[in-house]
Image (tube, rainbow, N blue to C red; front, side, top):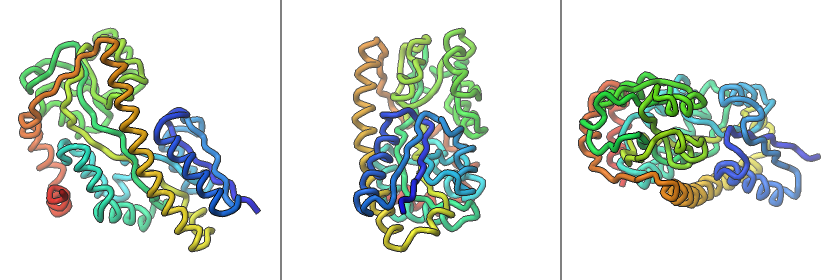
Length: 302
């Protein structure tokens, strides 16, 4: 008998995360002689991440690619990754998620009350600011209203960096930029392009890389528990390969999007990150106090 694994992502078809997941499905199908078949539902057709998690918890959905936000209340350790400048750069973040810390956090999610098995990590790049005026130092952010994700820590981070953080949904950001309700926003380059926000007024992309937040993909524990040990091991092996494939696809897509943004006339600014890092020290102190040991281990990761 064939088991259909339904997988879901809020990103569209062709997006690195979606392609890597489809590739995992093909490998699993081949390795099990068709006992498993993955059906991918991209573009948020099965609902928001919150809805996908709920469906996976009851076994109505088998695999979901989600951001770390919803896991914070269940496994507090993941909140560390949301802190500004907790990673030196993307290479440092990758070394952490590929190593023992990354595995421990996945294991904690799997062992939690969430009824999910954490299969692997995915990159979502780094978030930087795009604005109508060039940002090179914290002083340049004075009086600038910058859209951030709806999390008090992100608002406080933007305020600490010198700006005025405005919490707002992703879908409202385009018109807010266009009408001047905000002076800028922050995100990775693929989203800046794919959301068309680059046409809504910003002229500069200032590479603060203040947030480097990885994502995860999880499986319904109900489905996992029905699999044989051998099949579970295969899925874990292919999940690790998917983690690496998504990354390669991600890097390629960032290069392509940067080229498109430059062609449109967006100017990329390389800046000294230290003043922004120093300015956000109070945020790390406040939100990281309970994770001091983990943060030390992250900092010690080469």
